[in-house]
Length: 529
Image (cartoon, rainbow, N blue to C red; front, side, top):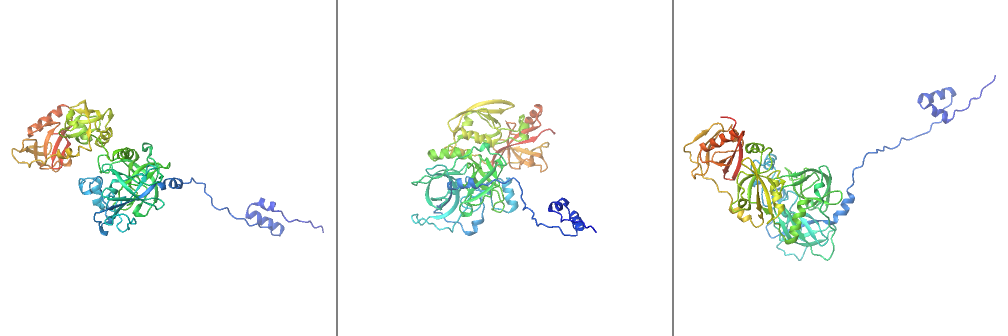
């Protein structure tokens, strides 16, 4: 019998099967097992976009960032105070903020103690460290280390920037470089209004330094790197993004902070926040936290502000600003309607200070300042910044809105640095107590008034708790001095001013109110009664 010869199938034949069923078929048809080759799966590889590394930026800028130690002959606080977290911008504490201020409400609600690292509290970015020994044997023994913060060199000859609240109470200063070298520094100047200070290290060497960025180009969402000295640990790097710009945290008239979410803690005060080009976009100065620790909300002074202030400090150790000399408040939508303004913009003059540049130029209470040298004024804070930037002695054209018309006056600005005393002397006096005589109810407004004892204005003797006047903060015992910029001394004067406003097509009237805390404006609806 003829037998056919059946050869063993090649690997190529097996692979053509490509399935378990195909391999089984080959084995059954031949009766012989096919060769099986072991293979391994490839390791997982993901071609995802890679996050940026900050290592190059950090290695370049770290030598320019220093720790700042401050010695003082004041008595150090106890360890029990180490957890405090206090506001201390320009000497203002949290207890000095209005009761309805959002920061005060926030910390009262959450049980925290404050919001900014003053020189002193270990809260905020600038912190204390009582226990660190003074390693400089030449320093007087009565000086104790009382505060620590951060700083950075801005010139190769040793000028460095930090926060005013880090150095404000110091008697001696030491900077610790990135390599651990300790050098004495002297205070060149400081500015409490922007919380900036300038130190100088005199040493026979050239320092690595950094430059300020053009922060106008910084956008929300940009990467930033914070370098500083949190908790006295030495050079520490954190990264995040710009969370917001133009933040007003109630620390002063020049608030314009950059908010970042990089981890900033006690001891970071005065330290720089860099962009990815290694340029300083901001100087860390405050944190927002109910616990005193990092919660991802930190505030930095913009480079543009710091650059101008530092230049003045470097020149003569002080900062001089233009001074208009008027008390102002924001223009709300209600106030804009009461004055016939199309938009709630500008700064409302509550009162010009006696003999101030503004008063001499003819600016009056009730005026709304809408522009300075043709630059529109967004709000009261914007006016303060623009006037300060012009500098003392400059003549500026101030555009105002008065009695429904646009006007302009020329003002020669004063010097804010030298006029602080005059400003304090001309503060408003407390009003006299109201005497409930010849009371008359202004039912449509929900208030009852009586002529003031001193003959100026009318005293508020009662306020309906459900009225718009009560919701706007008008209280019994306060005094109404004018309505729509017309002085009033009786309820009849108020009614007359309201009637005129209705004839002019207004839906609200502007009331000037005087209280123990000063003078302010409120707008009340007049479309009833």
